[in-house]
Length: 370
Image 1 (cartoon, rainbow, N blue to C red):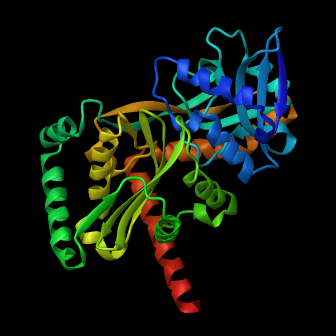
Image 2 (image 1 turned 30 degrees about the vertical axis):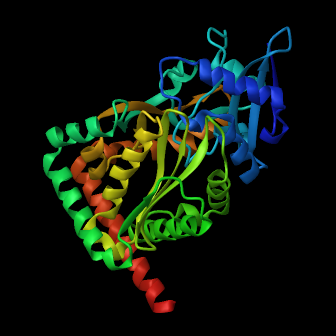
Image 3 (image 1 turned 90 degrees about the vertical axis):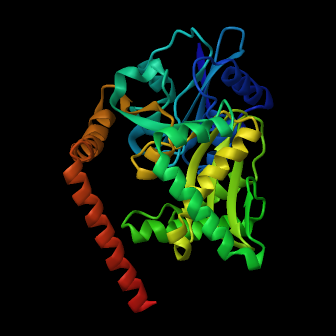
């Protein structure tokens, strides 16, 4: 077997087709859009200096698999779109005999780091350091069945959210009432969502992802992407003509991968973000989507909305050598510290409060100087 390492934009049309075919034939897991070639191609356009794909070929020169990654200094690699990609791994022909070290050697990587490794990626199992739940909403039986389940498992949540939706509708009646758009093409709505999200990151003391030019470019690019396995979907809840909540994510035929939700804080008392998620689930079910993947990370709203969970994994595969040692020294102590805090609820709560305080201080500083 041979490996040809290329920039994503240098993949041939035949290779892209085979990639899609391999994903379509994969059994036993959701058809996550982050694993499709369109996501890797978009990252390649946003990060051309680091994005790479190893194309694995057999004796007959037919593609046997694809390994998308980003290459950093000293041969240290990361999952493609690391930091924003919600599903990671290799796309391989079933039964392909391959080792992780052999793959890294072919890519001239000393390490490959992941934080949302797809379940079933056995090739990288020995590198898993920690596993996490990724809450999901199962709407395979339709929205009515999902709402009936919510009435049983989260009756207060559903009752309160629907009441707030009615109140918001009455408030906006004079302007045309509430309106939901599942797949909004207007780029102005996307800019509004990104501005809300940036403000939310700052308000909560977290790093503003949209301050990174490559992430902003990636999201704008994916908003225009249309392919059966990976399309950008911008969903917006309007009160009259004013957007009050929005979400941008990626969809395949059967999965909507939730990514960037936010809302207008001026409407916070109506919980427009929760209303948006219910309407997204309703519209997605009509589109034939069977699952909303809410993504890794604990949040109260996810606990209220979810019907089940998937598993994703964090860790790194390494080849012995200087690069791997430097990767371990630079990354593992930080990862272990984060894990220590996450696994102690009281400590994690103190950490969240500290971040929120930092966000408030930043806000005051911006208000004073801006």
